[in-house]
Length: 190
Ligand code: 5GP
Image (cartoon, rainbow, N blue to C red):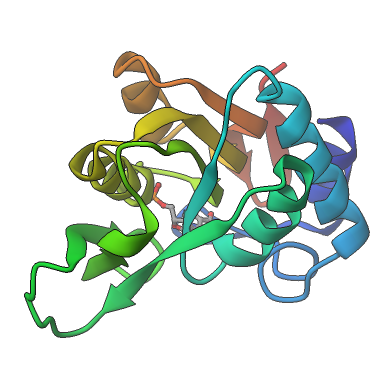
């Protein structure tokens, strides 16, 4: 998506540890005009899928998922990061290791909001090693819902997540894939 790539080149900042900061337009301050175009693009790419629900993970996926959901006319449900758990059987539970915070979280979703009749589109801001997405895939599998695919705003193609998820046969659409980045260069996949 050219508009997104141009914006990453203009305002993205490469930080040590392979972190790309896009907090001026995507995941802290949010440029709604841009995110609106992102939502439209996800709809275009998944227009053949009978999506009934968009699933994301708190926090930075939520805004993007909400704007995208307006184009699909479906609810958003987000997995919550929980520090301690009451295992009462009412929740789907999985573990996710945070790439940015180097911490393992339990992630939960109420069973009320996802079940076998659902067709799910996963949405997130970044794909790096794939832990966040694999956790969400785990939850979808546990629920018996159909996984239609995953829409990612920025995939860091030099980390293993994208390949791993495509190898699982999951339809993955990333709007910008970065093949390499350093202080003074950022290379996108065509
Ligand atoms: P993964 O689980 O695929 O390793 O990482 C995905 C999650 O880590 C995303 O939800 C995102 O919040 C965060 N993340 C991974 N890489 C980056 C990055 O380069 N920049 C930012 N801002 N967040 C990232």
